[in-house]
Image (cartoon, rainbow, N blue to C red; front, side):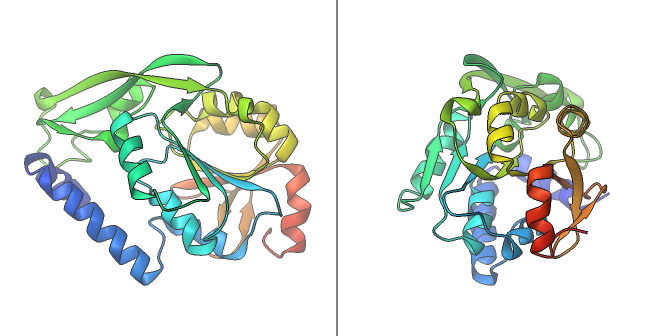
Length: 258
């Protein structure tokens, strides 16, 4: 069993450890200039065109924002977080970042109020695993992810959250990061016009339904980050990148496509 499973078991019994851990991890990453996920190192080699913006869907505690800021300190970022508690904390954490817009809502195929499901284990709220998909929410905490897991101690709470299609904003997106716990396909379908008009590079946690939408319906190419560029036709270990035909030539010219 991975050590992280034991850490989750510990934090479930001692919730105060979580904020301390998050603060320490953020300090260390910023000091060492290391993103929380290695795939964000792609941004060390790639830059958006003038006028293009970053879109962070599922901003959580700001890990992706910090990763983007390591390589693009002045880029415009639009961040979306439907969990009210996290969204408020996020806005406060980055209150001095004038190039960041935090939206206290999620993204979907239409403008609506949805139930946001949040897993709770032994009274500890795993707000980072919140999802509009209840099944996805329930499935993540199990015997493999928490040492000594007791199913009777798992519950799911729900709250109302606003959501709307990304297309409503007509953003000139250059890079779109998705981490929405199984709801990726709905977000992408609500961004169909944005994908067509801007052809942003998409980076998201591996998700078969969203992959099918991008590759089969839109004709985009999946790719894995190699440490510098992208390797076509490959899945990443955690995240996979997706590239539109219109963006592929640009990446080839930059030596970032193979």
